[in-house]
Length: 163
Image 1 (cartoon, rainbow, N blue to C red):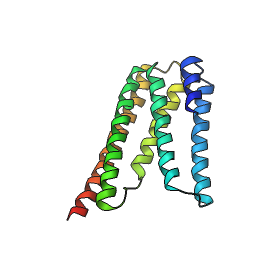
Image 2: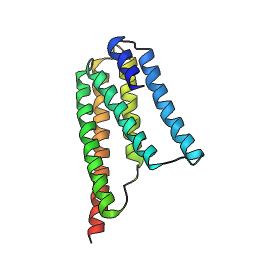
Image 3: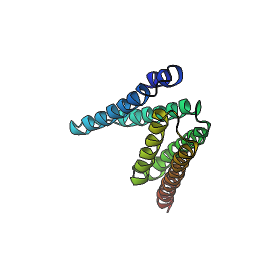
């Protein structure tokens, strides 16, 4: 749905259908995960591809939002750095400790805050700058906190294995 979101937001400038398609994208992601778990159809490829699709959607939406809300560049850059750092640490942790640190509460909260921030900005065409700034900064704060806590867990797992 990424191309549709880009088309609706950047070319049609549609504040109604863009968030609807965005929500539909999220709903299909949740449904896919539920179905995979319910019918024991989980695969390593599915887990990896789902995560890549989620991050591509998030990066795309943030990139679109930057066209109207320049401050969105901050969470966009942080998200890219955070994901590169996480992928690198996950690979090192997997190699050294034999596992990847599982998703925990702060990662889920981070995702919820990010999606709420993006959704509100898509839908609220004339959002007051102060409201926009507060949402963006809350998002940035949660991203930094989550990245720090995941990094701490990975480093702990790597150090534990070295002993």
